[in-house]
Length: 111
Length: 118
Image (tube, rainbow over all chains, first blue to last red; front, side, top):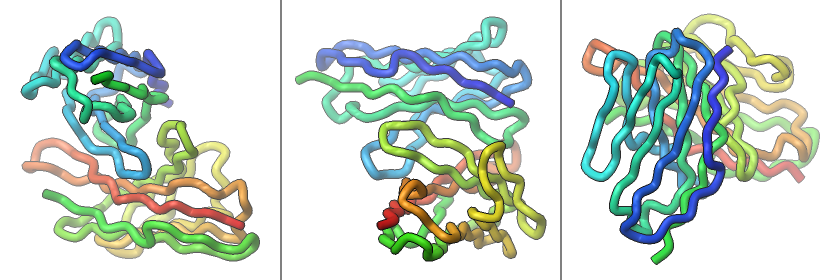
C-alpha cells in the first residue's frame, strides 16, 4: 500500500514568517495529494490539493508543489498568522481511492 | 458544498457494551465511505472501506468482527464497535468520497465521534 512520510513533526515560526512542510510518497501511481488542517477535536479541513498532472497550485497564502519524479510534495504557508496554528496532514491517494495520511505536523505561530 | 453528518459527536459507554456511529451524506450519494480512527496526537488511520451494497474491506490488523460496518444505502453508513474496551477509546471519523464536477473525486469528512469506554 501507499506509505506517506511527513516532516517535520513540529514547526514553530514567528508570525509573518513562512512555514514549509514536506511529504514523500511511495507509490508512483498516486495521483491526488490533499493537505488538511485539523484543530483539536475537529474534523480535518481541506486547505489545498493538487493532482498529478499539475506541478504547483496556489491559493492566497497557501501553495503546494509536487515533484512526481522525486515523489514528494510540499505545503508552503506565507505570512503566517496565529490562526494558522494547528496540525497539518498531507495525504495521497491512488486512482482517487482511499487516502493515506502522513503523521502530521504541529504548527505553532508565535505572535 | 457536500456535507457528511456524523452522530453521535461523543459517547461514553461501559466496557463490554456496543456503540453505533452513524454517518449520513446529506446532499449527495456516497457510494464509498471510509472509516478512520485517530488516537490522541496521532494521524488518521484507515480502518475500513465500505461500498454501498457490498461487504466492507478492512485494513490489516483491524478486527472485522469487532468493528461492524454497514453501508446499506447511498446516504448512510454505520460503524458498530462491539464489546468495547478501554483500548477502543478513540476519535472515529468517517469520510465519503464523491465525484466533484463530474471529473474527479473529493473527500468529505464527518465531524467525528469521541468514544470513551469506561
